[in-house]
Length: 88
Image 1 (tube, rainbow, N blue to C red):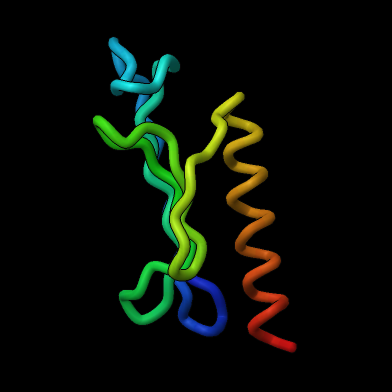
Image 2: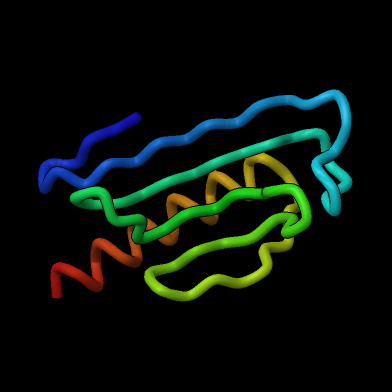
């Protein structure tokens, strides 16, 4: 976990699982969270039945998982964009 100077929280949790979480085909379960004052602003996760998806502010959409590195890069890029937008 990381707490930003404005109090926003970022948490990254990734587990290796013996069987993919349906409908995904990779062997990871993950929950990436960025929020402020208990409100999720950005999130990436894969839950059973829903698969890989992304939350950005109030929008939710499917996410095309390729690698763990790309997932973490996309998450960090979203946080940077959100923080820049918020501070302009």
